[in-house]
Length: 82
Image (cartoon, rainbow, N blue to C red; front, side, top):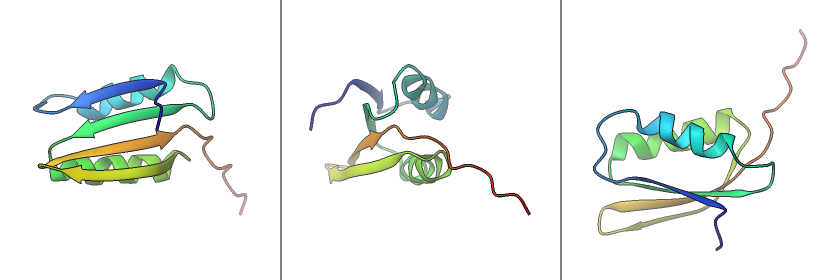
């Protein structure tokens, strides 16, 4: 799948989620961010971050210890009034 922007977090120790968030910020709703990560804790963080922020993980592949995500930018769901 085509990605409008890519972020590689392979071998990164400092601020990978910040890099991912900054990569997503420059995209318009509906555009695609490709993220590669080689740390299991970061993989879980990307899944949680996408769900919390209204983004859709369209693909997730694991090969040779590297997970590649294809994330489509969405909009965060509106908060429900209680």
